[in-house]
Image 1 (cartoon, rainbow, N blue to C red):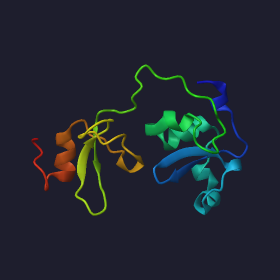
Image 2: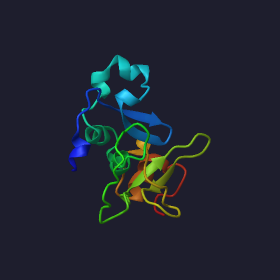
Image 3: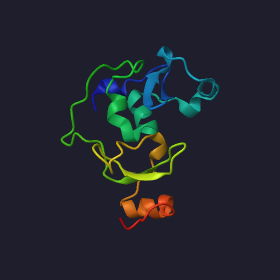
Length: 143
């Protein structure tokens, strides 16, 4: 890990949860929610790497990539040999007004649903596992 990612901030780094935009910022450069300010020890991490790893392991590379305002790192990361961050595992997506659906953590056409987000972190090895737990009452899990 390059040393710039391990630099400690006197103020610390905090997670930002804004809709689908998830990243860490240097607390000095951000307006933080009152719940974080009232309990900084519960939220603050010393480095950007620690913040990204603690709160966004599933989006670690994006969090560290510097393309989010306020994280004050503008160096791109060297691509991994496998450019896809998808696991190929399965998760359930709950959408207001619709039945839940099991999707694969991958990019592309269905059954891919894109990368699982913060609320879809429970991943299953097979469609069958996801279906048997979450959608058995609305679809045939043997498909």
